[in-house]
Length: 479
Ligand SMILES: Cc1cc2nc3c(=O)[nH]c(=O)nc-3n(C[C@H](O)[C@H](O)[C@H](O)COP(=O)(O)OP(=O)(O)OC[C@H]3O[C@@H](n4cnc5c(N)ncnc54)[C@H](O)[C@@H]3O)c2cc1C
Image 1 (cartoon, rainbow, N blue to C red):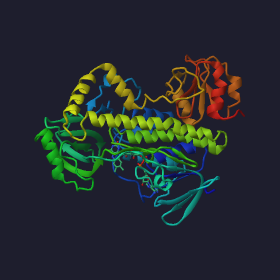
Image 2 (image 1 turned 90 degrees about the horizontal axis):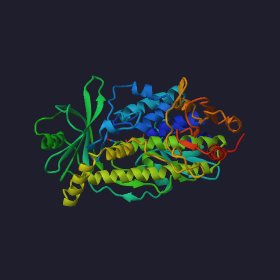
Image 3 (image 1 turned 45 degrees about the horizontal axis):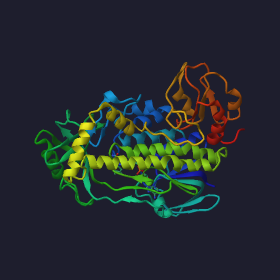
């Protein structure tokens, strides 16, 4: 073997995974076909759950320190969600993907992981013992497992002939990174009476301190083939229709057309090859859910793959990656499709769509609806099915951040190991059997006992009789 794991693709998914594998003590190569990192802003922000995961790894402060990233409460189908109803410690932050990628690449480099650039995977072959990968320059590499984090047009997915069912794109809108004048007080989404709409999101400031924005322009008659060249005049026209002369385009940096294609692979695991991020699911970028879902795929997969490679976890722990993340990806696709319909993304102006949109807009004024949608788009609503881990309401959810004397419980996850909170100091004996994989902490703290997986999800709480089984299920056989 040349390396234990080969990660194909150095986007946010691949780099997050490489960091998780590093924590798990696994030798990892990250290969990307680009000769240097993309400078496109791409996804516009990080959800509460993603921020929380960065915090659990001790990376959040330094990530947020790389720029001036405003908080936001987000939107659902273009209807703003009020910060007043958010129930999460870390609100959404408008950190553009380009900043996250730069940060992760630098962090990996400081840990000795350097992306192998100009490495385009073209062929792969797997057998019982491992995977052989060949690159466009005819070099090859042998690894025990390969993870496809190679994006929406995944080569690995094609080579596997993996089923990628879903909906083909039926319409496009225009998306651009711009500088504007007069856009300071504008809502995230604005429609005119003819159904033309403009969405605006902050992208922070450029190197000269000037405000950059993501602009999306849609509406009836706006859908054209994806390859149609985009002109400044098309953008000016879109702005004029919605805002008159109030907002002006000062500079266009980058533009592309987005389609409403929505697909998801049938299986996240193909033997020794696993798919993550956009390689596994694509959909409209409403709420930057693609990047966040990809990062969270990586967090779910990293420690499990690490455990299998290191030998303490049974092979079937890897199957829980598909079991847990496929339903999350499917739910994201569904909420994006619902948003697309409810905001009339395509610009149909169909009476039944407009009626649903109007009714939905009224409903979103209800605090409980606001809270529900806020939870959905924060990533905090995720609850994994964990058979055999008990039925306590905390099981399957991301662990609360608890004050344990001088430390917070989330800080205990920095090592990438499991954590058993044992406030009554009664589980020392059983915990000792897993002490090479799980840290016991929180003695004397004002909390209930719980077992937290390395990805920050509670996998046992409640009945003490279930603890040993949960330790075995998630952390392998006792020492
Ligand atoms: C141009 C663009 C604009 C976007 N705009 C938005 C937006 O406005 N809002 C939003 O929410 N989301 C947006 N997205 C989607 C969002 O960026 C993705 O959800 C996110 O990038 C997914 O991360 P990933 O790491 O899974 O895949 P990617 O970020 O796509 O990374 C995949 C990596 O794999 C590499 N790769 C591909 N094939 C190979 C191969 N054969 N061998 C080696 N390396 C390979 C690529 O070079 C790339 O670096 C955009 C995506 C793109 C591509």
